[in-house]
Image 1 (cartoon, rainbow, N blue to C red):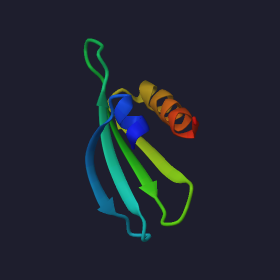
Image 2: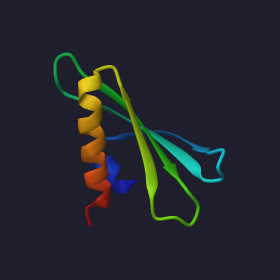
Image 3: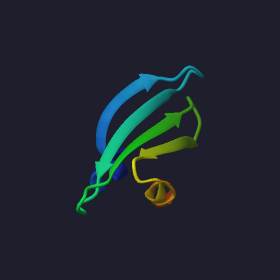
Length: 77
């Protein structure tokens, strides 16, 4: 989560997922006018090295871009 926090993604909540892992929720806002809001859901499985990422935003065109940049950030060393 340190990588995400360093890129201005704010921690919102952590909850157990129905599959036995946990879900972490984070948010981000762009500095554009008007601002674009993003809500991220990262689902982590116990003992696994992979995460499922979902992004919600009002501006649907930015969703795939936000998802791709977050995946690249998490995969970077």
